[in-house]
Amino acid sequence: MTDNDLHMLFYDWAQWVRSKRLYAPSPNPQSIIGSLVRLPGGNERNARLDTTLAALHMAVSGADESHKALVCCYYLGGQRVSKYRRGRVPVKTIAHAMGVSRKTFYARLLEVRRAIWVRVRTDELAVAE
Image 1 (cartoon, rainbow, N blue to C red):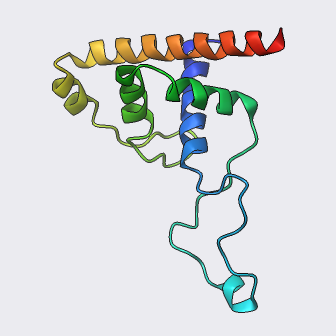
Image 2: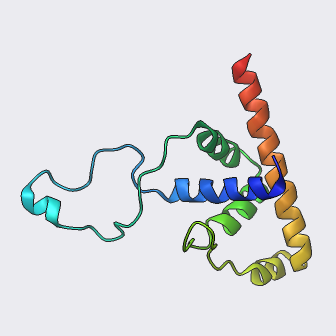
């Protein structure tokens, strides 16, 4: 998997994490009036059923705190506008808070993405055996 594919997979994971309905019953009452009422934030869709995203979520959740913070800060920090446009993430501000340059921030993010992906692949291979 290329770095760009991995980057897009993490964006898909962020959308998967943000989904408010993970195959749970609808929060709307089953009446006619309830079906006409839209709850706030109703533009988010259900999470798609994908074992790779679930495995990625488990790997991110089980990662070191610094790795988890870096991934969540970048991918969950900005709201995605559409499939191909990412949200605004204040990378310079985050890099300054970490005490590194912007280039170093992206290098660390790439390294963390790769490390988490290796963990996902290792877990998948262990399950297959």
